[in-house]
Length: 114
Image 1 (tube, one colour):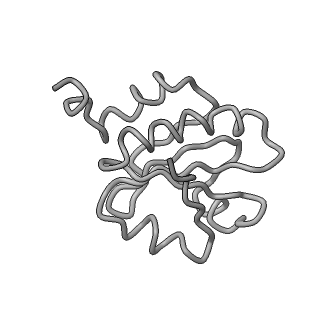
Image 2 (cartoon, helix red, strand yellow):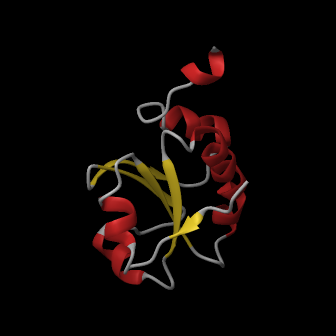
């Protein structure tokens, strides 16, 4: 189980916008309780569906430019980027099952049902 990759303002375009597969970006901060709450769920989703969707974290305190560019007003905000565009935005802490449902356009459970 590898820790989720951190992206920065500098690496965002290469790591996220140019990615071949969808990328979920967790906009978070050290002081944010709900951000810490959902971290294990995001890690579990990354472990289960990492072949279909990449999950990365962006610390908004250390990387304010990207958060501002995408209008992140409250955290945690989860943006899914596909082909360089925001394809979905999820705001607030949700349980893992709810997150998986929200991400159903990008991940398939077929592999786990077989």
